[in-house]
Length: 131
Image 1 (cartoon, rainbow, N blue to C red):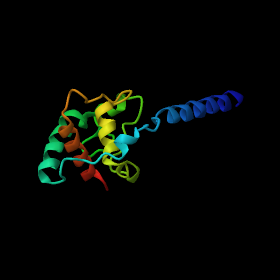
Image 2: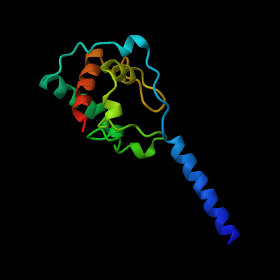
Image 3: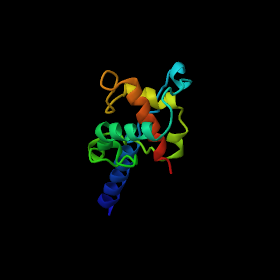
Image 4: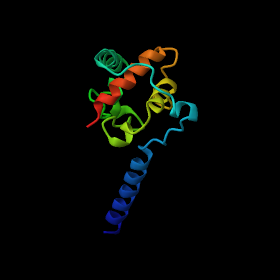
C-alpha cells in the first residue's frame, strides 16, 4: 500500500512538472512593434497569400486551423499556441509580426526567409482563424 501511494505521488508530481513545462513564457514585445500598424490591407488577396505562406511555413506545427495541432506539434517541447483563442487574437498586429519575424526557442525566425509583406499577409491570415 505504501509503495502504491508513493508511486501515485511521484506520478502526480511528474505530471504537474510536465504540464508546467509545456507552457511557453510570455513574449516580450518591444514597444515599437506593439504600436506598429499593418501596412498590408486586409482583404481576400492578402488572406489568400497569407494562407499559402502559412500552409508552407506554419501549418506543420500550428495546424491547418491554427489550433496548435500540426503534425510536428507532438514532438515540440512547448505547445505552439492556439490562434483561435481570444488571448491570441487580442494581440496587436505588431505583436504577431514581431513574433513571426524574430521567432524564439523552437519557433524559427522568418527574418531573411520571408519579406515583411509576406509576414504581414500571414498576420492577416491568422486573424481569420479566430472562433
